Length: 541
Image (cartoon, rainbow, N blue to C red):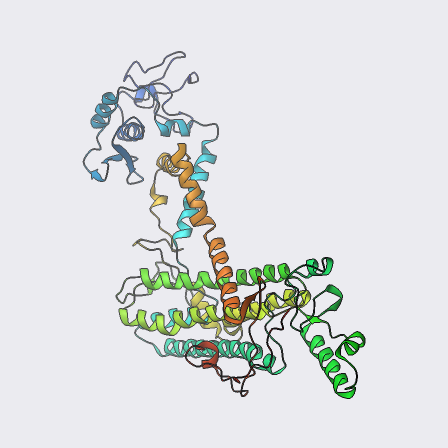
């Protein structure tokens, strides 16, 4: 593309005339770099190329795609120079203008360098801003944050800050408070899960409630087609929409029918059922239950992310005690003159935090998912299951509630001041992000952006699809796997297959009301004692 009149040579800075393809002074190709973007010295003052111009020419030369076996690697921002990297080995001493010229001559190509083509676009400022924006997004994804609004984060961070400052009295008190409220949150969460489990496994069984499984899943087909198979309900009769009731209403109607049988022994069962039909117990909408269970699993994703981030933090930080507090150059009040950041901790500290912070948090998340899915699968009404799918989420916010209501404000302030950790980055900015990307020159930033973000050929699209599936939608697939896993665990535990559908296993009444946390969290080691004879079995069709 012809350069406008009055443009300057990108190497020596001489004035070029309209129609000139090459500089008559140095032989450089016209249009390698826009003079409007990067102004050059006047022709009278540019008899020889300056060091900046030499470095710029070298940078453009090394970014040429025709240099087979070499890749441009940007170095310091002030030099705008490049070194040559041959495959995996980096040559550190090829930075002169003569070397770059010889490499350009060896290629025998007159193609414009990639950097020149990019900066020569109609809006180079937008291109540079886009490159820095993408780079900042990538850097933010690398950072592992601290859970600043939870007692779990407080129990992890505050003792390390106290250790870094040689355990002053105030920080020791803050550490003790954080650990105390962590224990309170764990105990309350475990108790609530125990009571949810007790209601389903003890009180519901004393009330004569069998497991819901898939009773009523084919209600529409059973109502419209009298010959449709698998329509027998827990009462032994055919399920239809006009005869479907929730468990409380159904049990009451069965009690009335049985009472009439005792009061009128001369009447046949058909006569009593004709006047006092108890109906059947089943689910109102199978797919509503499935959707609400999936939504409940979605509520668990933020908590699962926090567990993963805490595990990554304990894994990546150095396994030696480091200072979590540094002094800033500027002074200020309270914490303004200090920088609080994640640093290393010894192996003993890592083990303690894993056992008392990460492990309880992960186990409570798992049992919350298990108890919540079980609870929702046992809910028959549409309105009840929608409300319960949202209400169960309050268990996951219990630690944040304790932090907001009970944890001292000074502890919360320290947590908010603590910066995250970037794995593999020794030098971090004040926000916890790597500053290496920001040190590149503008043209090098655009070139790196071009190399990393542009899609080239089949391989580029393959990598794009891979990143879409494994990076940007990975939590969706995790939710799908967790949803299917907990659903399958429910059916496998309390249901059995008859007539091609899942029906309840025989109902055994517990021997007592005693139900501890051991029965809830370790049922395989501490099973619930039940009667040997079942109080209910699935009637034959």
